[in-house]
Length: 189
Image (cartoon, rainbow, N blue to C red):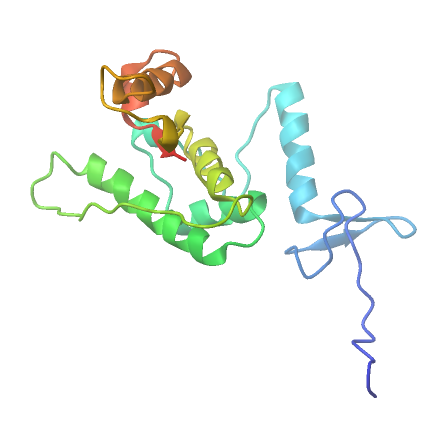
């Protein structure tokens, strides 16, 4: 039958609008009301915050690269997936690179472990999500974030931004906590 797609009925979460293929579980309520597992978890978190009885959700864990607790690449990727649409290759590469970067920093005192340093260059037209990826990574990892305009960078003593000003912005976003700023992200746009 040409032009006839699937006859299967697609159910959607009444709260977030995701369809049954985009979530792990879709729970039916009275009438035509449905709620997905993600919305249930969100509701649980809201209620726990209000009542002060926060319990960790299944599969969740506190994350903070500032304390040395670096989540695995899959965890980082899954959280990027929640905030950034598309850019699958960039999300995969960033997840692994960020994990390796913070593990390399954590293992700096251990001379037996050697992880190679890597740099990332995100290239693309305006509006494809390069800055959003970097900001989201900083939010996921709970590290300070600073954006610097590459066109304004100059040598010290000339008109424009210099390295010291970029670092000052990062330290300010870390509430002047130098240890936290040391693990922050500087995004040169």
